[in-house]
Image (cartoon, rainbow, N blue to C red; front, side, top):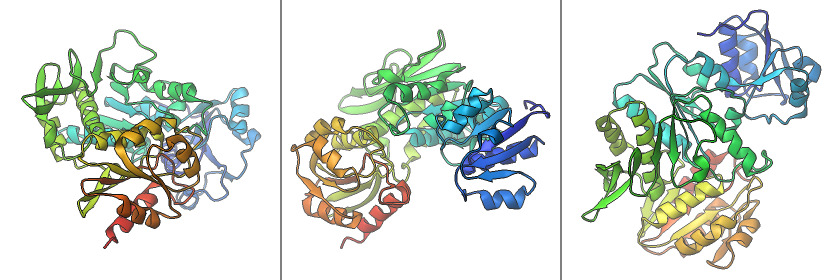
Amino acid sequence: MSLIASDHFRIVVGLGKSGMSLVRFLANRGVAFAVADTRENPPELATLKRDYPHVEVRCGELDVEFLCRADELYVSPGLALATPALQAAAARGVKLSGDIELFARNAKAPIVAISGSNAKSTVTTLVGEMAAAAGKRVAVGGNLGTPALDLLSDDVELYVMELSSFQLETTDQLNAEVATVLNISEDHMDRYSGLPAYHLAKHRIFRGAKQFVVNRQDALTRPLMGEGQPCWTFGLSKPDFKAFGLREENGEKYLAFEFQNLMPVRELKVRGAHNQSNALAALALGHAVGLPFDAMLAALRNFAGLEHRCQWVRDLDGVGYYNDSKATNVGAALAAIEGLGADIEGKIVLIAGGDGKGAEFKDLRDPVAANCRAVILMGRDSDKIGEAVGDGVPLIRAGSLVEAVEQCRAAAQSGDVVLLSPACASFDMFKNYEDRGHQFVRAVEDLA
């Protein structure tokens, strides 16, 4: 485990889950540190004061002079590096870092690193289940579930990490065994100056990686750095050398690697072309770290998907109801609309809207016209979505999620799917995307 110089002083900036994991990590190693948070009452403050009463903590507006006492600031992913106090400290020579950088310095086992605008959690979970099926002692976390530093253990044989662009901003050298950016579409445009800045943040995942996995249907996922590293690809087209894809033979569609059919697509429990792409990405990542195909395919056959990610809720009167509340950006909603649209007999009745985070919605227009029977609009940016979608399908306004579900039932026909895939964040009307998804499920279950 790497040593931290005892005469250096650190400050943890942000006291959420990752901040508290940093506190535990530093305290266990006897490192001198303090804590700062822009909030007056951050979520882990009571825990910090109870377990580490000796640690100095400053809450409220960040004090530049206080921050400049440190050699290094470990900045929470939730706090933008453009924050003036952080920029002022950096200008005076204070290093800005984060928990993932510290994790990478201390992890002894290989790292599978996964980012992308969408499907990160699904693919991360899948690779973790594949590794477990292969008998590996695997630790799964990062942006998903357990904070990275809490996973560190000498017993772990493989780390499978979901990483957000915010986490990668403070990561200089991840040194993953294999890294991927699954896809790139506009997200967090309220934090980034534009798509190029967001794209650059995502691609920090490839720094020091020994192997790459690339989505051959998305040119923006190809690494901007590196030469000579093995590169595996995935996509919904027919695969060739070092590639995973789909192959059709005798009317049966297969997940395939190079010239080998691996398993029929119909054996997947999750629906939609986007989930076939997720399965292929997971296979490519698992193959890169030496997981055997029999274990990976067994895990795929058992995988029923994650909550709030194109999650089947119920069938009623010949209509399927799906909760895709995690679709907090346009790219995620497009994946669900096009993926399910290609997989059903009827049409989609879509519920969309919320806080668009500064995104544009023009890319929804053609897929919605091709796949949707109607769109139920709600939330802060509903008018903006309606303008982008245009008059290709009926647009219906709803003041609540319960009303939206009732409108969907009235609009849907047998063979259709009702899909909550908002293309927006949830904070204008809900606590978070989980709350939005749970309310949708309750509203659907309450339908007579």
